[in-house]
Image (tube, rainbow, N blue to C red):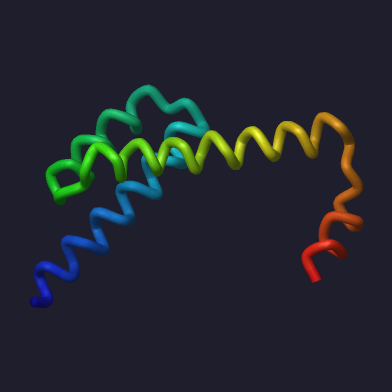
Length: 79
């Protein structure tokens, strides 16, 4: 139904926001988005996955940035 579909959308939004909150280390946002995601039916696995994705993005960003990997060379690899 429509309300169930919206619940799934809101759950996904909170999982994305959780990943962003984890990456930016927002002590206020993290518990809020975990609480809302759980209220909307997110499993522990979905919550862990959101945080894991954020950690992976931050890890790769740190590696590329810290090693001064050429941005244009990286973009060329994506074509």
